Length: 595
Image (cartoon, rainbow, N blue to C red; front, side, top):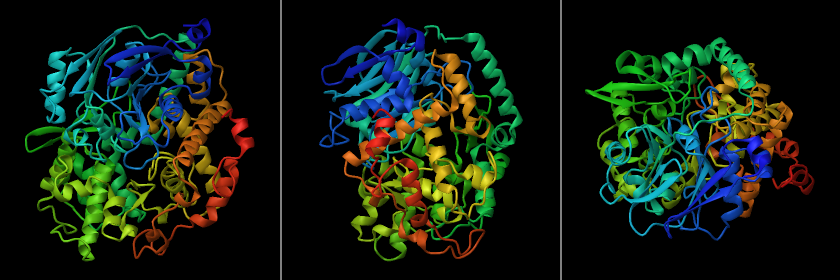
């Protein structure tokens, strides 16, 4: 390890794991690589870009699966407990990063690693047991086929009760393209089918225990910045009041009021019984206690008590996907269905959205099934079938794009680049619509959360219907998100922190002296490298689009008569990015970003 890398960041080791050969190798994180990409999302994207070529299928042994943390992980920085999984997605074919809260990230940091890079395929079901610098390949045959909670309990009994587990359920084992990777039993690296990649490698779990101390470059400076940002969290009404009291489901009634709560597969933007599936109603009926991820003062997580069971969630996106998206107003059923998805290891957003797509296919006579908007009959059984890739469940497990295309109505899939769009109808939020269309990982609300300024007034309220200035906002939020995902911090900190706060945290924890402008440029570099990966895979400007449905006005509600004006925003977005009219980064911009 060089002196320069020691000075920059205390975690500079990459654990490179060959599941085929059952071997491991420790590699150094080059100082230049750290300066350019930090850790987390940026580091994972760079590793996948360099080693995964277009001819490598997402479920082939040669695809990489990267678990990465950042330079702030396990420090006193608020929300610094997250980790990110990066791979080529089997659902979208794009570069993909999926994030997870909980408590595993700090264990990885304390074990001494910046990332675990997994390649190959084990001959038999396997789990990886990392105990500081000891790495063992263990048989998972006794839990292959088991759900997430019993698998987690078994692994902790076999290893160490103080360890942390990231594991897949039956959906991952069956390589369902909606499969998640679970931590703390109910926290998910949920989107893009990362669990299917793990299953394709016959890797049931990674169990990690780390006890090494965490050092930072300037502990006194970091303490000063941390105290400052903690005050900002307490000052902000969203992070100090709304999220701690109601969790993310606080958004249900608000989205419905603005007419952007997608209902019946995005046919409408408001739900007649939104109150019945709201955060307020969840608090009243099923709330047991709050859940805090590592180092988080916000505590947005919910533990619910339903039918005598204490179970995690549901989150806003899940309430929507298994509720209004499918026309369902049964809060108890939604909460139980969320739990089944967690146990099977399924992305609730994509499975709910795809079931909604199937319901519309049935409504239009394209699919012979008893599925019907508003009815929960046999839906729990269908979710089980998704996890085990059986019957119609196997079709739904391929995602809405494949499902709707199979039945010759591709326009009924509410997706971008193969990833199901989350719980905000873009017709009522122009900037957010542009963010959906240009997202490098497909339909995602977190690449640039324009709901903040367009609906919540954070950091300032902007006119949600205006298109002027929206490309600039989208670029800013995308670059900021890419950089902070490489630290790795929770997206909710953006409600309270400014760009300079992130730069100051990074500068205190490492020897990098980074301004806000330089921090954003790191994010821009990551964003452009993701774009270059996707272009190499065959994606183009043609894929920066939204389903045709969003060119049809919403019939009623708070966003009545609105449509998306994407064609008016895209050219300005490309120009700001330094891309040509076909969405390809120009040579000058690549040179500027050292790509």
